[in-house]
Image 1 (cartoon, rainbow, N blue to C red):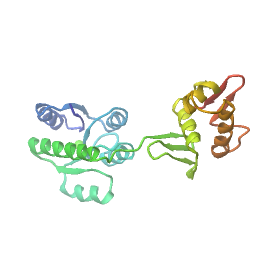
Image 2: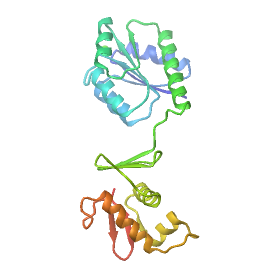
Image 3: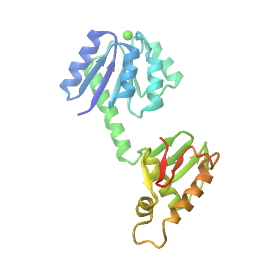
Image 4: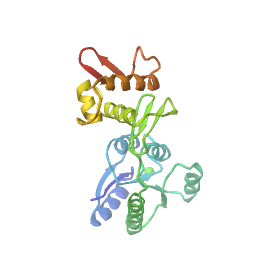
Length: 229
Ligand code: CA
């Protein structure tokens, strides 16, 4: 069931929208205050946002911009004035659609459905986001197998990449060299656990500002390594 968040301070309008959307099978949440609406939008998962422009607390322009910075889901903006629509477009806030009050609730439902199916098609066509890990100045794109250190793309060998990614995905967990060797090189590989030490050294040279005071991969003496969260 698709989840809709309505951020709208006019309660009569909000509940009318909610009734129609629920009749069409949507799960609907209403928030009447801009600041609370923004917090909810950023912290919980919704499939589409219906956002009024004039709101107490934080306004619709700001909410739209903030949601778009973090989420790739449709935003439908609602305004009382036709003039505002040009303004919203001009600001390039990333809204997907605009509707002017008063509107018919069935028109709203139709647009919500259209945007949801368009987004589903986009995801279905492979336009999905890459799986990316970001920790401080380190960015690892698992899908593309690329790494950036403080914004500069840096080359890693296959095993260095696998080892770095494994550690970064399991922060604050101490792994022994044996565990890392088994995990990355498999049991049947030729080599020994000294290989792990060599690879850690090479990774540090690439990601650490000062290898003798590592900020990412710590040595836990007598045990192994830990990636700092
Ligand atoms: Ca309003």
